[in-house]
Length: 357
Image (cartoon, rainbow, N blue to C red; front, side, top):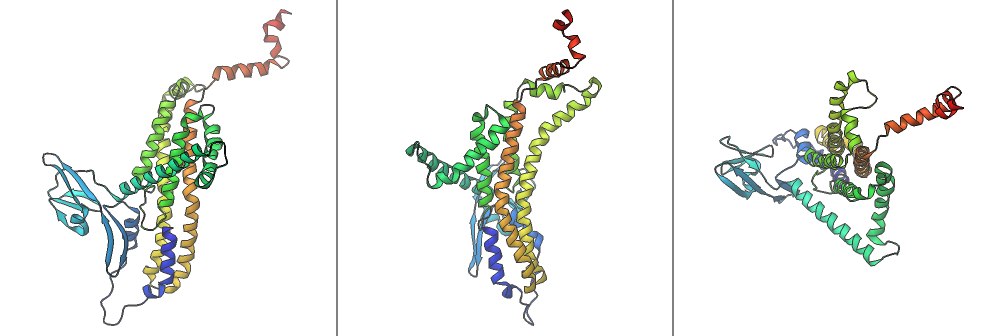
């Protein structure tokens, strides 16, 4: 776990960090917690693994930039690192710009892109191994990785898909399982040392929410759209107001999915880094007795949050799909209500067969 190891490291090195500068030595540069925290949670064009007395261990990614009229440019991000410029290009807060202000389209490989590729490979390898185990052990009890992941698959099927979508749940199981394990795996990978904050990137969570919106809209039926544009049971004069509200709710749902996942994952990282930053701000070993226990607690809590957020995103996705497929039998409901009133003393007088007698 990234933050757990970091906090333990700072706990054992507190006396060193808390030492005051020697007399006559130059005052150390003021610590900027905001800059450090944003650097750790934001995307970048390099992967900073760790630092030693001999230097920094950094992996630089290729920058792929296209300028209209000038063509494509491909070079290492090391050439524009630390404020340097190269061939009219420079990085400003990890955004690729040009020295002359001309238009540039950035298709670079960043830290989050590299993390996305690696996590996707991990998912493919893991579930290819699980699928191979099912083929080899047909009708037998699962073992190893298969036995570990099967309860999660069964839970998503029985407690999420079946209950939220209904009889047609099977066609959506591949998507729901992909969403659940993708978010969960990347949340866990984000807790490892030097990892990228992939699910804490709003572009990633927004893309997941857009996919959910697309699946929901393509799964919708006539009753779903009639409920939006006709809103049964609402007075005619109120429908011009309700239609925009119903349409807005269609797009508010993916926005809420985006913000919920992004905010919860990023908040955990920021809180932990804030506790660690207290040690450097106050420059006192006594600060560690407060910041380290709280940081450890939040780190352990993030293990629960990682699977909880994956479950919530999957559950809401299934509910949105199920709501788009639900049949609204307003006429049948009205008939049932009339039959219930027909059982009363006055209601039976309106029935034709009773009236005939």
